[in-house]
Image (cartoon, rainbow, N blue to C red; front, top):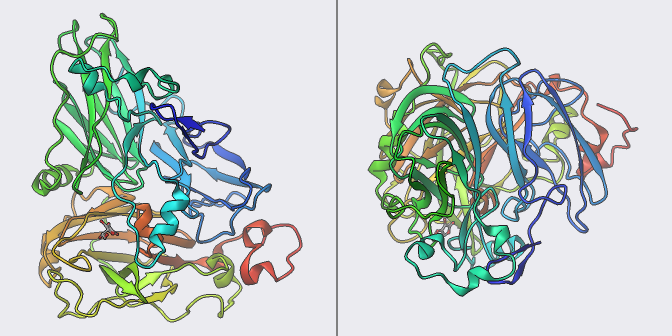
Length: 540
Ligand SMILES: O=C1O[C@H]([C@@H](O)CO)C(O)=C1O
């Protein structure tokens, strides 16, 4: 339970009584053994761990949701995995819309003892960004699944580490119009976490976004941000005034505290990519030389216009791999084109990929594939391309979609290209941003382009300094090309990280080398057809 600054109560999900959940900090090489007890009364849960690959100690799961059964109320499930990559990550509920309800926390992996980063810093901060709605995630879920669909709209507040303002903005304080609500019960809980710094030092700020919907932009007055990490991968450092961050992504930026130490400065976060209706999220960079309660002398940075997509593209294209980091194979074995469309199905609004809207089966894929249970999901391969005459600039001529749960099956070790193709929405003129997130792998981002992907566009692919990431955005009416090696035995979701969009079917399922997956705990197979197979307790 948290209190809104207007004094009313609001239920959120927490972990160990904390919202957001505790920050988990580990070192490369550590084995994390996490016992997750579901204390919810009526619904199951599963957690997805960004940055975690399946590494084969008794059983590990970066997949959640699609390859294991939900952890039932009262049950405990043991996640165990080795962390093999340093970086800024987070974990979140991947069941229903539990992430929107607040089920998330940070996961930070440090280099092994004795090793240091190639960049120097004197101190660090961790900012986990999220968006907050005053309607419950259940109400949202019902609305999205209704006929006609009731859209969730824009969030009421942007949260930084679970804290934010509503009807009580810091900016209002700044203009000396202190709102009375700010004094009410719960106000303290929402007081921003201030970044206390010493002059003439370098700080690393870890920033991750687990928003339900919002694409964000972050800036600090008078301070350049030097980007050094994206989704747990090093990038060639570059300096900017502000960064865009989409749901599912994470960055590390360095700042130098080389400004007037007799002043404080705003850190501001605003909404991009959709017409915003959410106040800026704010906190203060406080030079410890002065009190943190002295307000900055100039207003907070202005977020670039929400539809200034050129600004976003310029930023995104600056992200290239750090020199000397692994580069993509020059050739691919298989190329899959995925057309993203908004559709209808019997009057319900859906998102579809190549005209299939994903609805997960009741039996976990890992069990279905490993034990060859061919009736538990659609074993016809899903389409690998879309009609070449599809006009991405117009609403779909045939708005109807299919519902499905087929799997793109890869040979272990194959090099896969995915071209994500954006298109016009269901009606009217418009095309939205979608951040696509892949479980269990990083991919190289080969490029972004305008309009429909066509023969010859691959000549523009970046094969020499392509950044590795686990989330990549598609811009309105554009395409994004990715390459990865299917070298991680398992079943892996690939989906839009906007939670309502995934709920409406915006995802696909990849699988490779499932026969090699060993030690699946019985509990992970305890639902659907595998649940009726009478496994003895143990691992399969
Ligand atoms: O899935 C969505 O639905 C709405 C709108 O397209 C229809 O209300 C919206 O903005 C989405 O992102």
